[in-house]
Image 1 (spheres, one colour):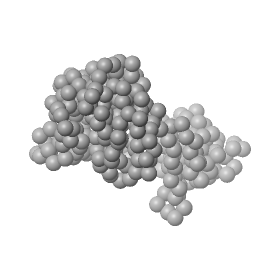
Image 2 (image 1 turned 90 degrees about the vertical axis):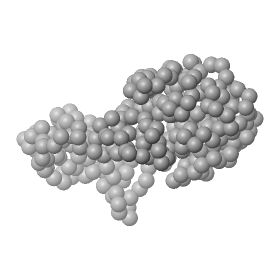
Image 3 (image 1 turned 120 degrees about the vertical axis):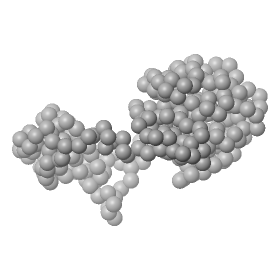
Image 4 (image 1 turned 45 degrees about the vertical axis):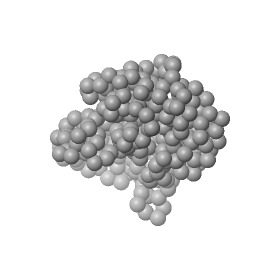
Length: 295
């Protein structure tokens, strides 16, 4: 295996990446060429919002080829193209044979939610302190417990902050199904997990089965009736749009738990939900907040 490394300006990255794939690259990755320097630029954006910039000023493109000859041929053919004029070939280097599956797995360690509640990949031994465990591997659907938004929801469930037992639970925008599974682990017996992405629905079903819990999984129109607990870990923009729907699904005295919200967006969410429920900030981590309310 050989790695071809290139340096490209923002407006040529997509063209070069497409060309590399056509030239039999096994994989193509793009990174900020100015990372960890004074010139590093962060990229931000939310669904429905146009980001300030779509790429870094300069990017490192790394392509893997089966052998040195393919990498050298790709470099030569790219250098002959007009669109490559502002780009540069940095290096062609051999890579040692590695167990890529094991190497990838080594990047994912068990995640502590609280002292006795852990999210543990299936290839790891259980930590000694773990009394409540969700077995979950990184996959296509968002939600493995590492992001503050997910972790705060899991901590809310584990610490039993609701004034009443969890009762009937809805995990809206379930992703991997991690919140629904956690609710089941902590005593909920009637749980719906819904998502607009069929891949997420399948992932939630598979993860529930792997964790020996029963949850119903489906598309959003499956959420019907009244729920004692409604969990939604999405982002602020869809959460605002969903305010009437989520609150209509709460039974009297029910608990609403919202995450995926930046600290600066707290007032926007309070205003969006004001006709239905009073929201308060229940937790904060790394610039993100968890907001809760009761009907």
